[in-house]
Image (tube, rainbow, N blue to C red; front, side, top):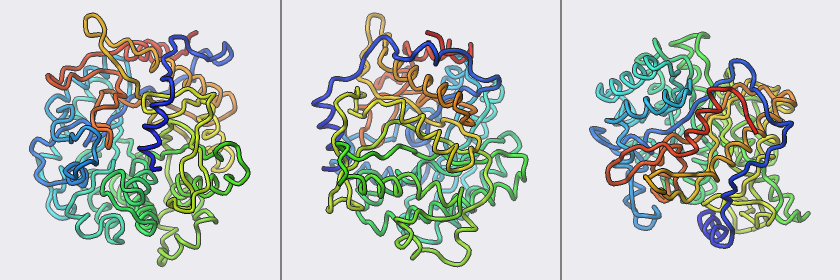
Length: 469
């Protein structure tokens, strides 16, 4: 059973969590540290729309493959943020948020993935940065959020060793255009998800199904991270703050069974450690080392291990793994404990997993500065009277995870900010437009943005810097 099938089967069997009262205890309430950063996030392919982008990315190609996107949709229009970015900036400002994490579309800026830049793309991001700055919102630029130029994919994409070099050239190009106004940079978004779902399981672009391609994509994205940090430092020196956004999810043995422990261990190595250990420790996890080290050449690990200033944590849920010889690395998704509530996609809701992730970063990786760069939930939102979405399930989800942040802070995790995923209901990859995560609803016919109850709640909480009962 693949991940999408698992999601659908669990969702069909589970009751969606729509509790109107949060579950945090009084001990978890109170103020966040002074200077704690509140923001929200989005990504280019999910919100911008194609407009004048002249070349395909791998998601354009993937969306044309029958059956790959749940509702048969694509990102050609998305939320039309390329033209409506002023509306989005107004929403962020209206919530009192101080940061917006967005991604730059590589093919919009550099259509062939190398060589000549498209000034229209660079100018768009320059206008967006200016609008954010004028509104008092700090731009956090993510240089790669899965939308590889198709021309690079045709030459091997992330399975090709030359791609990190092309990425570094692109990173330098963007840095030179925006670096006079941007000081916060993320090199990559969720390289493990991109490698596993896109190159191993075929559920995301580019749709490959190969263990070898998965390992190559992991290693070459790690190289791109290191080369990207070096390219950014060459332009901005040490005045910029640079990190990466990693999907970090605890891997647990399904059913608590002893014979599933090895499955959880190798999945943890693949999903979490293969993207954490090289940049932070200069090694690959031992359980995968023999396989990944075949890809090493020369000073690869030194190239990857560039000093960074923070780690971005994208957290959604723990993963339960069972032994499965037919699985990508001998494991597969197993049953989720019945005690856990589910989101609209059937994903388990477990804020304790976030505390676990932050404690692991504290204890194993030297407690670097941390930001939650994604956290949020899909629920089957339905407009009520007047068109308002009263999404109490999402409010409970956010509140309980912020309570988990409070617990982690009390345990000395070096957590410095939180970005809610996401500002707008958008194109949710293989789920198309069927999986709303936004703080604001987007009418698919008119593209009108309408703040939900969660937007209003999050705004009140961020302005007060306090988690109330």
